[in-house]
Image 1 (cartoon, helix red, strand yellow):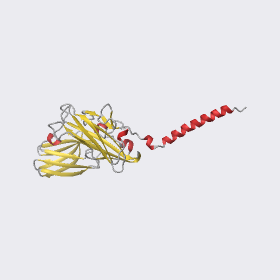
Image 2 (cartoon, rainbow, N blue to C red):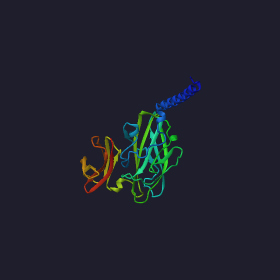
Image 3 (tube, one colour):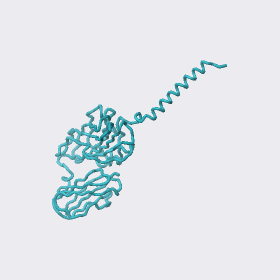
Image 4 (spheres, helix red, strand yellow):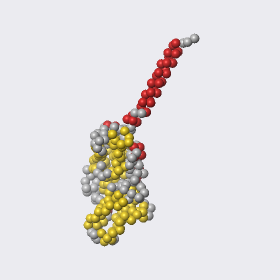
Length: 286
């Protein structure tokens, strides 16, 4: 005998389950609902300590090095241990309206240096056990450019050099495919050591961008004229490439070196001119 009540109850249950399934299906095609908008996963700043990983791991594309996206109020004379300084991160991408970043002050081996302090609790946050600062959902929207600020407490005496590594990503309305990823660094020094040039007095070499993908720009300033060689050396001491061998005058000279065929990795750039030597670390990332 047909039981109308049981039939009616089953109809209600099936309708409810179908509605839930439909809602899940719709959400699965909603690109905005899938976007992570509350900060990056720790460990994606593009630093050597982060194995050069950056936003492209999730967003695809190629990371492009840029200059001056991380700035500070640290004086040119250098930072003082224990002092607090303001750090500014700027992400600029025309026609984009969603922006993100992750920054970490590290040594070349990935050790955290100093202390990150959130000053904008609405738009920024710290993760990775205090090692990284990144955006919050309220810090994502903007038009063409977004700026975030935070504080940094300088580390103990003897650190000498700190590098802020930053990865930046932007897109239009949260849709992947038009994402842009940029990498920027800020190198700062302890008071009394204002530049790598002072660590290598008389032979000052400025290398940029760092990290670099295709070309290295070298600004060499030396006190004496003479034969000069610049070698690219692996961390285990093997010569990888000869970047420059030339008799150069005293003063400033500029050179552009093609590194597009050199494998990604961390290298030393060693400059020798007469009795003077300058050694710096660089990152090549294709």
